[in-house]
Length: 343
Image: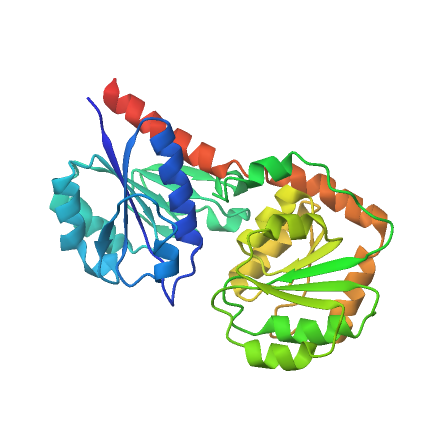
């Protein structure tokens, strides 16, 4: 008998778009494998993000963990057999409520990045590279590691390309995520712009960047600085770059898969651990946190990356860490569950 999967996610002013995009990739991968998958999102999601979903979807208002009744309605309406949750942070009390209401008739899978707590799920998938986050109080199966991080589908084809490592650093691209809450891009624009007029500096802004006025004042008159936002050619820009500067989130994984040497400036404590874990594996230099970064620290770390042998080694190590096939691995876990259902 055909079984049904419901994927529940969120994206709004508080939660960046990463979880949503991961779920869209899973949705299409499952559909391509003949699985009846459905998406459920928050109604207050920005219209630009909703436009990325070509198929129909179900909505809740703003916070599914406070709207369990709505979730149960959809589960019963669509005869859902498996729920995949990919939220910013799921509470175990919510999982207990869902299990109690549905009387444990539905398989529950959670994609979680925090770890080190109790989660009553049948399966937990933790895509963090640092084993510090892999500990759970659970009776369910646990799959951990960066190989399970779901990244954009086209990353796989870029992973197969061989990036040129030039003798001299000619281009630096900065991409500090969708929000860049500390405004690190503004500081980097000033400091990098003073390094050399011969180095091309690309500043990639996310949709939630709130320091546009300050940034425009900083880069005014700088011919070697290009500011870009909502671009479709980000991977091409990275591949043309000798160095990329990022926070310690998904972009760092993408750069590893591309083999683009990276300098990490973490915006949050967990990004610091993430950056350090990559550095231990030979990819990236993990710099000081955004609130502590100085021109002197940045310059010293960039000096290390001017060495072509360092960048070549990073390229090789990065491609061994990440390959952009996380969506396939996660969907393989889900498909395994459907095969078990079908006997």
